[in-house]
Every structure is written in structure tokens, then in C-alpha cells.
Length: 146
Image (cartoon, rainbow, N blue to C red; front, side):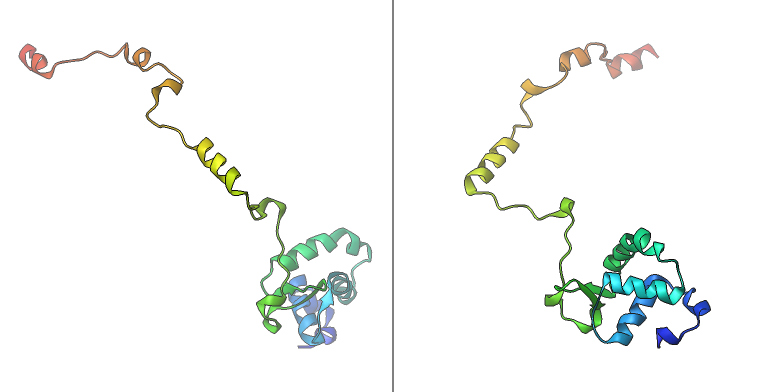
């Protein structure tokens, strides 16, 4: 489908991600984020001010859509055209891989994490204080009273 020949009314019914899909499919080459979004703004007849205010959301939408991949050169293309070794891995700061610790530091962390669950010296409350208000009732004595 040639997206550039499509009437504006039909284009408005598509999402920006769908328009991007058709643009990339028709171009047969990868395109950077800015050029893709400028083309969408041009096709939809949107004001140029939308570029600066919505480019971040557009980039996020492409990054989360599995149809697209970000290549090493910073351009987007259709995932179906590429093998996985050309895809740029986007890693959030919160999800960074753990650094390899030297063996000594790993052992120290393990020793710090180990503690005796049965050690009563670290209890926050006194068990005897907790039990002082409880009363023991002998069931046999209750039966005799009835």
C-alpha cells in the first residue's frame, strides 16, 4: 500500500506506528526517527510545532512496538527484514545487568546475608512478655464442671 497516495481522511484513521510501518515498507531502507516523524506530520498536515512536542512520545512508541527495530546506525527498520544480531539493545538504567564482583566480595556478601533463623537474641519483642496474659485451661476440668 502506498501511504503517500492515501487520502488524508484515511491516514487520520491510522496510528503513527501504522503509518511508520507503511513508510518503512515502501521505502525499502531504514530511516531515522526525525525523518519518519517529519514525514508523518507532512502527510497528516499537522503543525510543525507538533514535531518538538511529540517526537519523544513517537520514539517511545516505536521502541515498544515489536514490528520495528533500532539499528546500530540509529535508524529504524522493519524487524522482519533483519536478523537479531543487528538490533540495538535498549537497556533502562533500572534494568542494567549486575556487574561481576570479585570472588572475595561475593563471599563477603554471602556471609553478610547468612544468619541463624533460630537465634532468639535478635528478637524485637520478648516472648515471655507476649505470653504473660494467656491462661492454660485443662479440658478435663471443663467437662467435670458441666
